[in-house]
Image (cartoon, rainbow, N blue to C red; front, side, top):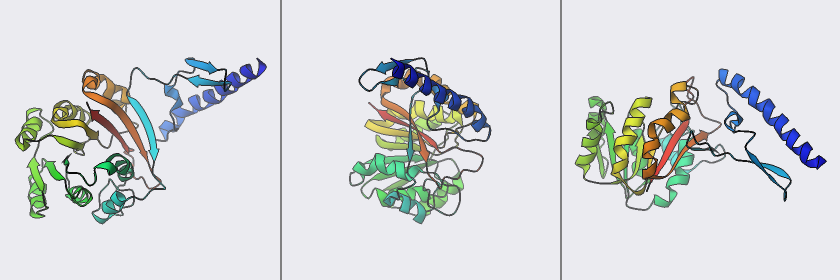
Length: 274
């Protein structure tokens, strides 16, 4: 009995310290992993077998969340992201870096030799499209972009089985129409466009219907320390769409090389279609 009281008391003391430290760390755009402030310390079971507390971590006001650090992993996709410099690769040298390619290697490796369809919204200089083209050899790839100059430049690259289309993420009709014209369903849709909360929600609400069964919709570059981009806000805006997905999960993509300056947006939202 004394051991039980000791273990409960010690756990609560430790968690309380980290709980009160967490808000101060966020002032400097630092965070604890996991974020203990989101755990209800008074909602737990006691395992008599292991004599430890087991916290009930289910959050009814947010989607699930995982933390993946790929600092010790350099994959083929990471190398391609360096060869065709894109922010998605943590080892490229030309600008901002995110630990996405290591995570994507885990998610997509089983699809690498399959005939899939992939769409990316927001192509910038077309480097990420080149990366996907070299990774998924058999895929049909669509790049959607608003900027006419970028579209014209991308088309000049004449990549095999790669199609560039115009899209406007600020308007629902201008999202659905370009996808309808493809007359296809997608295994992967990645949003890397405006990174504006309202646009991200609009893209999800209009693009999910163009996914194949078990297809993945991914929203990149979600800000970690801006209130309007809180995980609770995403949940409120998308809870009516939960029924269309097997799983909706935030992935905090850690890497020692992450660099996004003051933006701190190395987080994605992964949604897997039913």
